[in-house]
View 1 (cartoon, rainbow, N blue to C red):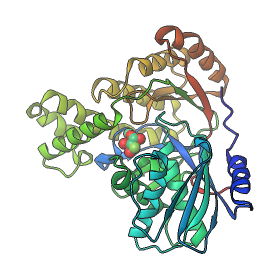
View 2 (view 1 turned 60 degrees about the horizontal axis):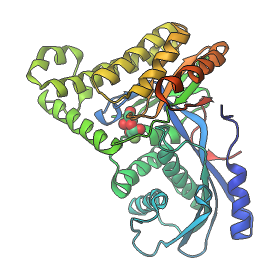
View 3 (view 1 turned 90 degrees about the horizontal axis):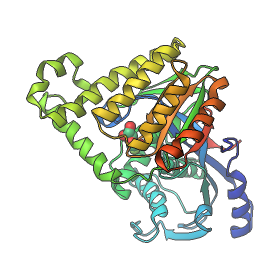
Length: 388
Ligand code: GAF
């Protein structure tokens, strides 16, 4: 078990002192996220219900008088990458991590913001490649850092949109807006109901008597980008078939009346998105009502829909969901979280059952799959900002 309370803040401030010989002027953090429900709905203009978690990307930074940016990555052996803002920013094919940083800065410049360079040290404890949005946390922390360094007049929503633009256009990954928006706008002890069309958000209080348990299957996520893009295309094709802008606009009744005109696979993809949007709105209401039994049913239906209709789960993730479900019964909810094809499961369970769940997974998961899980017990946390 990993203790969620440790932050990499001291790592970046110490590294900043030893590399740049002075104390950093700013310490900024942006969190990863766990999505409670609403999967693959964001790029269909739909609804999502994530929380920011107490695992973050953290930056120590100081502004420079010239246009040079020097970035040190603590998690990559203090590797340093330098580039000049007076030159066009280019994709670095050899050093992948720096492209998230270059991309965010490039997009800020293209939005018309002007600023000098910076000395930056970055680190983080969001597990990478686990579907907990370590990339979005990095994009958002860099946007937040330039906002702080140069007093940029940019909203949290635009920091998120800028991060998504960097990921879509500079890094080349066609993600939706959920991960960056929750990292930029998360709220302690709350989840955020996001309307991914209007980008309107509503903070929904998390029940005090529920713990957020994330279980990483440690199943290496394969073919994520190509499968993700295929799902997007299938959803767009389905929306076209119904003559609507996005699947958000297709009701369950419309779907049922006309689905026989779709091929079987496209119909399944559409059914997932249309029913998941409805489940997400209902789940937000269940949270407002503290109706955990209802939330548990909705999370279970969401997992089945991801498994059978959207086909983005895998046997390892399904195994964890089954172990947790048979341990908590109707006392809590469990489902896969994130983009899929491996990654993590999220469970909402009464605090008294956390140890029981951990023990059950520790005992059964490796025996069933040969893989060892990692378990994080998290708190819903604030979005990006200065480290206090
Ligand atoms: C990934 C993407 F980055 C998100 O935009 C979202 O589509 C998610 O997969 C699936 O819900 O995290």
